Image (cartoon, rainbow, N blue to C red; front, top):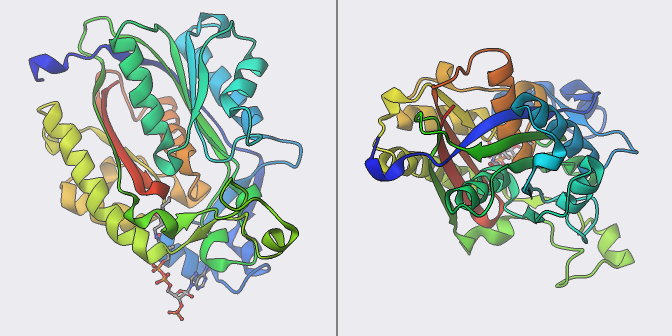
Length: 332
Ligand code: UT7
């Protein structure tokens, strides 16, 4: 490990939540012109979860956060900061993190959202790490939560089959000098493809009108092919940069916990990184693309089922709208 990269924050506990309702590919065959075969071949997705009607993003985040706090052995009142990666907050204003803070019953602590789409959790992790490194905060809750079923056009087969709902969380605290913790993070945005994945209506540029709602301008629009090409290249290079920052080779990575958007993207990233896919924590088949929630859900699964062990090295990488992408290397 490079002497300048002694970890200063570490993951004290993880948690995740997936709503109970399952939407299978067979269910989608009844809604749009698609097939289980197409979805599985092109993406690796078999089913996804859908939030209940009375569930908001902060409700899902609450479950994941409570579970992460329990694993960390901390109470909500021990938290010094909450950072939520999301693009599907309860309301445009205030932040999802404010509602999460309210539901957890925290003290008055800084709580804010990060709008980095699928890279939101890694952005939040990196920001939390910086605050702990600087000594400004001690215990930081980082969350990735998405309720994308509310912003999908269920008549658009090119997007509605891809995404699912869920939440994941991690509690960060100061490292204790044993080498475990966040080793390096890298954050990027290249806005040249900003319009290739967006929700065009409902913001200040295009306030919602009846015509806008009719035209589904308040739903996700994506030119998947454009994103695919850059995803393989950028996920690979961001991962390589996080590794070289920490002076660690791909051989020394125990687990890759990637954003789960498409199995074909992940296969190509695995080949380029020269890390076999059996060292990737994958759950895309069961959850689809849960955007900012996909990494913390997979991380929590890997920790709880015993695959990810203390002291192992975990590489995270994610890419989504913006185009924003990010990587993080963590010794667990
Ligand atoms: O997490 C956020 C970042 N997002 C991503 O990383 C997504 C990156 N992109 C992708 O994962 C892939 O581009 C998709 C899975 C979205 C699409 O796969 P693709 O192999 O790039 O398909 P395509 O867009 O090139 O479409 C191929 C064909 C088209 O038909 P024609 O024009 O060849 O006749 C589509 O209309 O597949 C058709 N198609 C479908 N057919 C059945 C598109 N969606 C569907 C569908 N079912 N659901």
